[in-house]
Image (cartoon, rainbow, N blue to C red; front, side, top):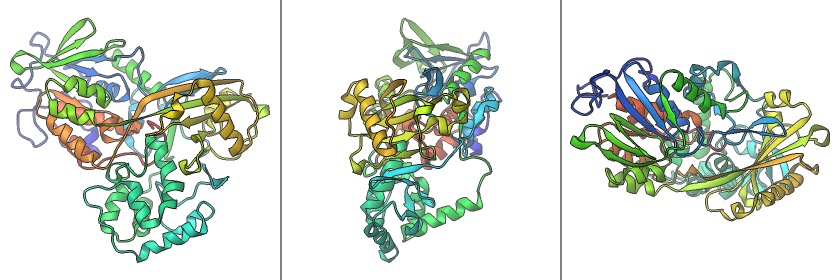
Amino acid sequence: MDTLTAGLAGPFPHTRGNGRPGGVWDSGAMHADTRTGTAHVVVVGGGVAGLAAAHRLLDPGTRVTVLEASDRLGGKLLTGEIAGARVDLGAESILARRPEAVALARETGLADRLRPPATATASIWTRGALRPMPKGHVMGVPGDASVLSGVLSEEGLRRIERDRDLPRTEIGDDVAVGEFVAERLGREVVDRLVEPLLGGVYAGDAYRISMRSAVPQLFEAARTHTSLTAAVRGIQAAAARGQQAGPVFTGIEGGVGTLPLAVAESVRARGGEILTGTPVTELRRAEGGHGWRVVAADRVLHADAVVLAVPAPAAAALLGAESPAAAAELRAVDYASMALITLAYRRDRVALPEGSGFLVPPVDGRTIKASTFASRKWGWIDEENPDLVVLRASVGRYGESEVLDRDDADLVDVSRHDLREAVGLDAVPVETRVTRWNDGLPQYPVGHHARVARVREHVGRLPGLAVCGAAYDGVGIPACVASANAAVDRLRGDDRALAALTANPVQSLHGGAGE
């Protein structure tokens, strides 16, 4: 991880990652303003990746402009209110065991607002009952069948035991998580545990999602172990030896959605320019091949370098003229849509089970895929709103768009129906709010890592250009920040972090959409 955090404070070096002179900031590739001695970098996209890139770019020798097409900053991180309570309407937690996002929060003045969950115990609504989430698994894959007792049928438990007697499964360069786990342990493990856990991260289909990109620890362990359960035990033993102190996850008082706003405030305070409502419509190399011409709304900007921190379809549209090959790869990236239904209840009308919420296996045919007891999970919500209970439910996943065709009132109704079935919640909410994330989560199918490598190979042929964001190195907040840091390092002439990300995906194994 050191290569991801190097260089935050100094000016751009004039060496490449291999130590040779001639980094992209040299006069042979880019021209800084000779009057001021500064270079101008345009960041396209005002989500957390774009803002993190701008934050890292700013130093006395660099002028930064961030261009965001929509009327707000933050991308999939968004705070709002329901019944007067401050809540997240997008991602709600950060993987604290990775350093990038927590470091960014500390650097932008949020250190005293980082708050771990008040409770981390969750359940799974499976086989007609709410059952404690098993311990001792990696993304739903157990190290021992006994930990899934009660979650799986007796037949499902017996099927896991056959793993140790099966010959090695060759996984090649990549394999779908669901396909591999089902072959080793049976479909019931996939349907009852892997699907709901992966769905919470990617809103995807376990039988499409890349094990190499989405669960890299499991992929590497499967290469060296014949037994999958033995591979999981090896991962757990290694994790125990290197166990970090402190919580696995953290939130931010006031909502994780305050992080991009704090980063934006820091960028502006240090002289950066941020423009919303400014869609970029054209990106071309400047005449003579030195720098870039960026057309945004009614403005034309001339930049020494550009960071594209936008979703894959938008990046493809902007790269079409200068890198048709990269654009073609990015156009092939699929996205899943989802919606979050937030409900506020009078506390004296609600009695919830213990824990922070529950996941729902799609195999049971329920509409919601998860529910979070937000007031229970985040102590600051409970403290600020002692008379309220706030819950969240999520609907939608890759390939299941029909549910999202329903209007907001219908989504509230189906969420209330499933909550009634799961936890006996009959009360009428005092307020509800539906937040739709259309095409919000990039999908990581088998071969994702190779596609990312090809995109970066094509983009790497264009001096002064880098890409970053959730479409490449992970959908979690720390992964997006790491992707931004590596993109900036590339512009500074250091490709080591970028190479490490491309070779070794760093996706979170935990969390919900965009976490």
